[in-house]
Amino acid sequence: MNVWIVLIALIVLIKCWALNPVFVETTYSQSFYPLISNLLRILTGWIPFSLGDLLYALAVILLTRVILKWFSRLKQQKSNRDFWKETGAGVLKYVLVIYIVFNVFWGLNYNRAGVAFQFQLKDTAISKEDLSSLMYWLRDRVNETEAAAHANRSQLKNMDYIYSGAIDAYSVIKIKHPFLEYKHPSVKSSLFGVMGNYFGYTGYYNPFTGEAQVNTKVPSFVLPFTTCHEIGHQLGYAKENEANFSGFLAAAASKDPLFNYSVYLDLYMYGRPYLYRSDSIQLKKIDSSLSPAVKDDFKELQQFYKKYENPVEKVIDFWYGQFLKANQQPDGKITYSRVILWLQEYERKYKH
Image 1 (cartoon, rainbow, N blue to C red):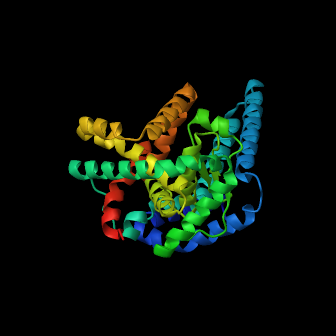
Image 2: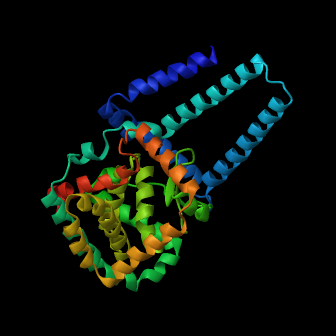
Image 3: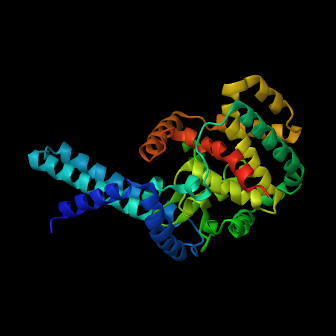
């Protein structure tokens, strides 16, 4: 059978499958995906380094070699009609294969019904009053957990401590929400942490190896929540606000104040732009009531982001935003902060 017919048929099938979020939720995200993701984690979890980073590095090397070979041939004036036809067909074939594999291994999760469906939460705008109340609540959580977290901050130098803490956090939250059970852990430190700072990422999920990658070269107090966020991706929450919500549930349920402080600080930062747009004076008032240690952490984060500002990051940031928009996240990178829209409703609905 012609390979093009097979590839096009598979893509049409994927597109049709993705049309119904509830169907994707039940037949893929809660059925097929757990099987393939668990298998990948079993295969890669025991490896003590990031296999995914090495595979991506190898892919870049091979791609560079192919491009150089292509330019060499072009320079030798072998660029006739057959050359361009062969090049176009080859590139298109590889793109289609990667697209199919990506969706089978992970990408269909972008089309699932997801968190809102599972928790019966409304993804609607939050009122100014509710937002203000939520920000005061987050401020209280940050201030309450700060002292214990700072007293134990030396533990954040030990990534094994953070990874085991994140795994333990999910073992706690699964009691309340069984579908958040995390089996066969595979969380790794990225081999390219400093490069990640320049590229602007704190972690990522590798759908081809099943590994959760964490950039360990960032301010240490963000690492617990970042790890919980990446595990959320492993559980099939592809959209960034959904991974944030999964990470929030786990980190907030943790018995470790380092995780509690990390998540509440992160959510407070996500909520600030929303309140700034509706009531900047109120935000200034709440900001001023943060403890001095929390303000110091804010300052450290600002200095960190400023240190690594560069033109490449802006380009990557733009294209990553376009990638998110192409995958059911029309707000681009703002999607991360949309976790705020679910937070207060969840607290009202599930609060003990």
